[in-house]
Length: 484
Ligand code: C2O
Ligand code: CU
Ligand code: CU
Image (tube, rainbow, N blue to C red):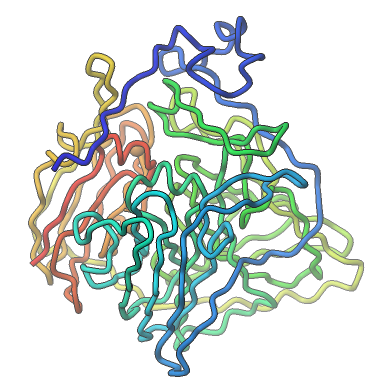
């Protein structure tokens, strides 16, 4: 079965009908705003919300099971309306009625049961990004039939790793995730050292393309989005517009578990007039805290950080700064994501962060070395994204043995960055003792990964790896790993 919808490049000459955004502005002017990468239409200008005040929160689940070792919840995907811009309604697809969906929380060793109902007009699945679930629960077309409209499915697995994860559909993701289907997933471990934060919050970042006048979601299919993936014009923080200020006391640490749930947007975060310490990544805590002035989060990637404002009455700003992920693509202007507004109370003395957080041993290769080449081809009117010269599902299957550590050389042969993601297993970038499942592969660069095919319950089966710019994944840049 060929699942892949071939991508057609929209004729670049007719700017007016290639985009539903700002038709009035584009017509007659579009020759003037072509960027790089072969004369692409310009990206839509960002909406810059005025500063506002609020609290960081996401929806939560109700655990229906009294057993402390079982988290049992109900999750429904359905259409609803939310406000991305104040006072303006947007029709979205949401989990339990909110964007992001409720944050799933569990402890290492817990059994997680999710009673899922699909009330969407099309089939869907849920993938638990970064979570080492048993293969049958991975939510890909490889392991399950997509859940039909009106149907239910029971996800049931045991969580074995602590960390900041997330969940999202794994069919028609570019469409379904953009519509609002994603949520955070936190797994805690009582054995981890105490982190001296006064509050812990999930911060799920996304961007959407909205009509500034009506606040409604817009579609944009043009040569730029086909090539680069869709980037919206409004940055969302837990489903709300950016530039929210939260009231804090100077010197206190807030712990933010940040998820980049955007389809294509690279978010390079900078903490201006404040402090930021990275304590964790995709696969849980780092070995030691790292002072982070800047932090690049590619689509799918996570960071666990401590942040604080320095002096009473000052504001620390978490800012997304420009990052060019391809010639003419990526953020070109800074956007204020969140602000820590310190009260005039005297500053707290910042609590000491443990200097060592966790023991992480560096992986040593014991299995084969593989080369995975990321490519792109324009074939007539088709844009293809390839792995080793083929588009999914024609990419040759990788057969791996459980219990081995393989060396994967990810060779990016294109002029744009790609966020590489593997399901079901963690890897380390060679030389870096950090557990990851999503990593940037810069344009024209090679990144060497050590992939830990550790055996665990349900580790055998078919797993996916792909570019987490979902348009590229659906355009062919995806492959299968068979483990046994
Ligand atoms: Cu977050 Cu296969 O994806
Ligand atoms: Cu995943
Ligand atoms: Cu890509």
